[in-house]
Image 1: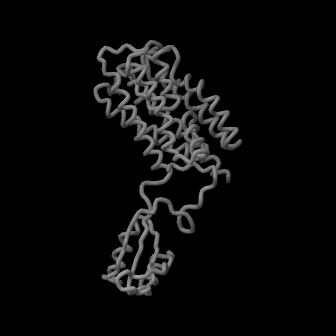
Image 2: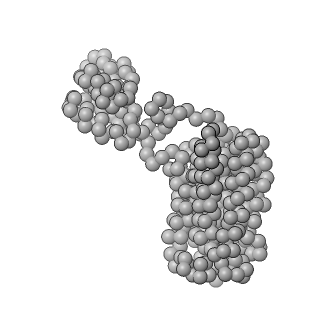
Image 3: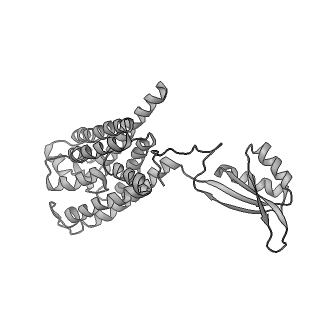
Length: 320
């Protein structure tokens, strides 16, 4: 890795941790959402032990998980994870002290006192939920793209992917579900929290929305917004399509031997993969070359090889 790439990678890791920590401090912790992870568990425990900040609980759970990450994923990966996981809870604690006026407000995590009440979304919890999910997902995605994690259930999800073949984003969802259940017991049913309205369990539903939405944002960050497109083409003008694909589209394709069920004739079928942006161009060109061509277009979920993504190595984090 070159010097610039090395610095860029570390910058993105710390930027991602900063973005994620900001999402928790402004849009999750004040509203007692429990979006899984060690920080979601920190929210739960903060309601029982309000004198201990959410970020501090993060340290308590991250340390053993980071040791596992170092042992399983190696020194370089472990170093990135350790520094990211050490930075994030400390940043959250510092930011919390900056945006609340005093120690009592920090213990209460009262959104009415957050930035002097200028960012109080108590009457619009769904907006707070979505904002927190998107920001956390963006931050986590930036970190994971650099082959690191922010600690916590990220590491659990990576272990599930490595040893159980479970998708990374699905692993996060499953691991965080256990934390949400803890939040339902402590916050939803009132243990360690004064709950006069009796609707604390609704926070669990918001928490599930955060978990799902943030996992989708992580998947977007890792795999992109759309899939490539796979085309199967049967045409009487194979040569014309060949010239278009090789010279105009500057791609290659594969002939697949096929036989018509009705006609019984042998013919070549073109197997072609293009980007989503190119699919309309290809369809229009096929129409120009052979209006009677038979074309099937479907999603190519992952495409590896020349002109597309390189094959991932064993330790590459994948969202799906």
